[in-house]
Length: 126
Image (cartoon, rainbow, N blue to C red; front, side):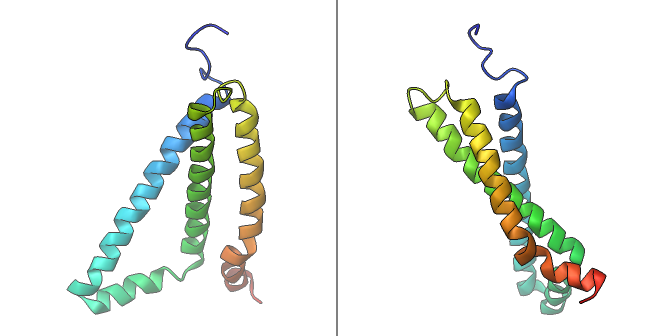
């Protein structure tokens, strides 16, 4: 493989993009979380109204997306550490990425009911 082409258009490049996107999404969540928490000092009634909107099925779906972003970002971060600090990491980065994806899918499947069970029962009935 020519020098400098390890990631170009391959799995490593897509994991690089996904890592950045999930990082930005997590930062956005933290920013909104700090703002809505600070709202309690300005107006407790407004804070209660905002928190009430968090109990909707749409926000439950967004919460599931947040868990997906955090989990992928964390698992892929461990893969990046392995690629950077293990002498054979670059050689095995593709296998490690598919391992990360498999673990991520299993964990996200396990989180489906705990995070979305209430929202599904609210939308579709008990």
